[in-house]
Length: 113
Image (cartoon, rainbow, N blue to C red; front, top):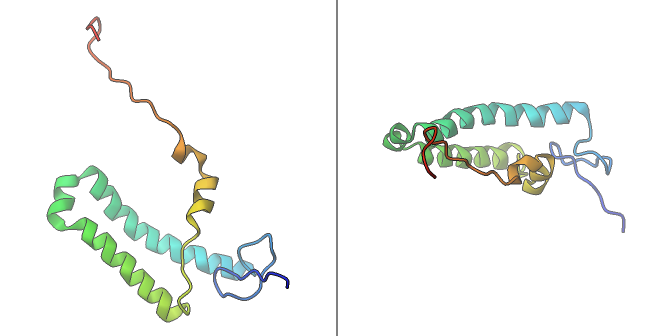
């Protein structure tokens, strides 16, 4: 039996080497992610770099609520199909995310380490 590859947007059959059946589906899928991502980006950056205010405002809970709302929209409008790409695919496209980073502490000139 041949394996059927489904479009990430409409679930119709698609070419094996593509994630979408058409340019329209690709654009619709990515536009939804862009809109949702912009909302999450602002909250996440506050959570990461303005921690005291983010904690006071309950930003982590807001992020989780947004994700739950997005999932409910997916269930209602997309027949339950998820609206995000597979984690492994994202990681494979961005190997720098797994790169080892060495933090160097910079002291005063001439100070012993």
